[in-house]
Length: 214
Ligand SMILES: Cc1ncnc2c1ncn2[C@@H]1O[C@H](/C=C/CNC(=O)c2cc(-c3ccc(F)cc3)cc(O)c2O)C[C@H]1O
Ligand SMILES: [Mg+2]
Image (tube, rainbow, N blue to C red):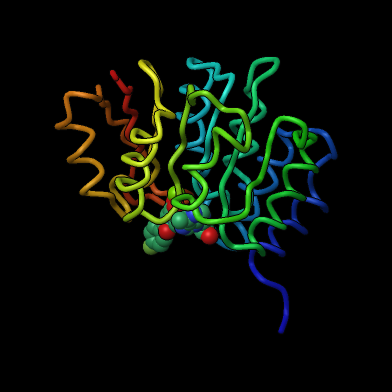
C-alpha cells in the first residue's frame, strides 16, 4: 500500500512549486506528468486553449465537471475576474482531497468550491445550495459518457443562459461521440472544434467549444 498517483502528483507540487504561485503549480504538474508519470490532466497544450476561452468569457460563475487533481481547476480559477467563482464537482473523495490541497497550494481556495459527489446528483441542487442563477462557463472533463446527459440536465435545470460557453475535453481521445453529435446538430448550440493533442503525447485530441443559444 504505497502512495497513489494523485498523492505523488501532490507531493511533486509541494516539493517543486511556490505556495501562492499558480503558474508554478501548473508547471510542477506538467513536469511531473511529462517526466515522471502520465496523468489525465488537460495538460499544457490543451490548457493554453482552455486559458484563451476562459479569458474571453471572463466568467463570474463557472462550473467544472470532474476535478481529478485540480490542474484545470487551477488553470481556470487563476483567470477568473474579481468576484468570479468556480464550482468543481468530483465524486472520488481521494481525488477531491488531493485537489483541495493543490488548489490551496496555488492560493486559489477563495475562488473555488470543490463539491464531493456525482454531477447528476448535484446539478439539480446547485441553485438552492450555492445561489447560482446560471453559469457563464462550464468545463466538461469527467466520464465521457456523462457529458451528454449532464448538459441536458443543466438545460432542464435552467442553469444555462443565452451565451453560456461549454468547453469539453477529450472529444477525440477517448472521444465523446454522442455529445459531439448533439451539440453540433442542435439548433440550441453554436459549436467549434479546437484541434490539439492528448495531454503530454502526440496523439490527436481536441476541445469542443459550444455556445448555448437558449
Ligand atoms: C459523474 C461524476 N461526477 C463527478 N465526478 C466524476 C464523475 N464521473 C467521473 N468523475 C471524476 O472525474 C474524473 C474522471 C475523468 C475521466 N477522464 C478520462 O477518462 C480521461 C481519459 C484520458 C485518456 C486518454 C487516452 C488514454 F489512453 C487513457 C486515458 C484523457 C483525459 O483527458 C481524460 O479526461 C475523476 C472522476 O472521479
Ligand atoms: Mg480530460
